[in-house]
Length: 123
Image (cartoon, rainbow, N blue to C red; front, side, top):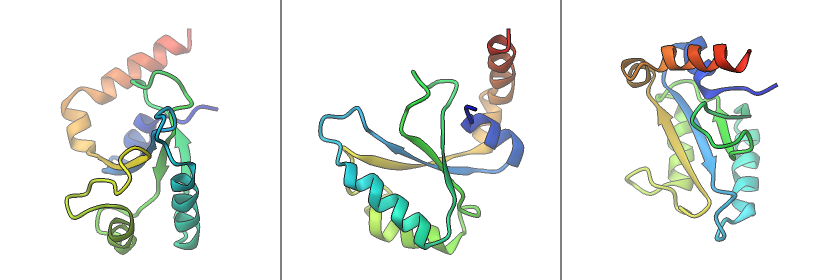
């Protein structure tokens, strides 16, 4: 079953963190994904593949990471290992962590767009 990032936003009604692995990039380093998953496992973070209604296909390399909000102390540890001071990936050809704002999504009619997508895909 396909899990949509939008469904997670709708269910939690909170900002969510996702990591995007750029598997289609010719300079993608597969070990970056392995390092992330190992780190998430060691820090007891669950993660799952997701897609978005805006993704071109379901195999997008997009994963929801279950940090407990943006104040989760593990997020700071993650950032110190995988990002620069501005929050950009240390390996921009391989991955980027993304914060998806629930409020911003709502303001851009996200719930309505998602409901239309679900209705159209169930036909």
